[in-house]
Length: 382
Image 1: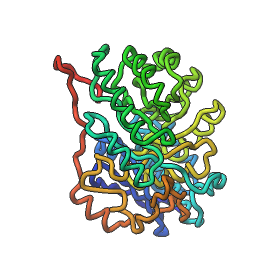
Image 2: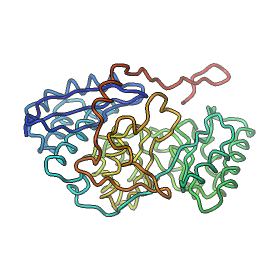
Image 3: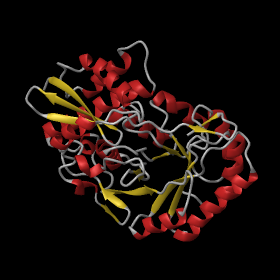
């Protein structure tokens, strides 16, 4: 099963797809992308292609090791995202060859379905309580929202009060038997994170996400002293070696590796095993496309400590493209009572509508995240 060709497709709204084809005509799909840096990741995939072409596609672990260790410099978002997409496509290809879902090749299923949550915004909020109530009416049992827009190192008590009031309104709207996750998005610095984490405790949140940027691991030690709310992070960590210090510090309750950023299915499966040893749950980060979601669900199907799955259906980023637009059968992601079934098909369990992908790639995209500034003109975290 030698690899014959790698093809890249940049499609709206902000995704990059990879098709890997073997000499006998079978193909597998991956999603190697960093949001806002799609062209850079595409260049990295192209550079890595020579390590993949001509290889036996069954040898996924050895190919992964070569891609990671074959260069003197390793790790980071661009290289690990490139590896991630290649890895996903190889697992998809292998599953199709042997007519097995990826979760079956990784030990078999531990669950039939997993809970999903929906996004309701909150950056510059208006009517978030109404949005949360609508999601509950649609059958979701959990939502995630941003805590705030930009915040200074030490900001006004009024802003804290507004955040508390807004999240309180969401809790009042959905009741106690409903999950609320609040994403600080790395926008909050240590001093304010301590204040906010303590102030939000009464709402019994499902988790606080990225209370500070991941590079400030020492700050998390202090923040955890100010809250009983579970702490989640990991969308900006890319390997076992990045996550290791957080496990050792004992400051996180839920890891959120992205299967398109953190080395793919192979690496995130290993990360889940590490997390289990530290009694930490896994909630894969997934605001991306259908291939990323399918890969995440395959892991959810075989990872005992998987908690809940992020997904991007209807998210505000998806202007010009939705999950189902690139699938032959969009019902594979049908949500029922706030849950989604683990895909039962071979490989990733989805069938890509290649004609739609090729047509959309003619348009492409140039998505970039906004640049925010504080009132004094200095750059703020987005």
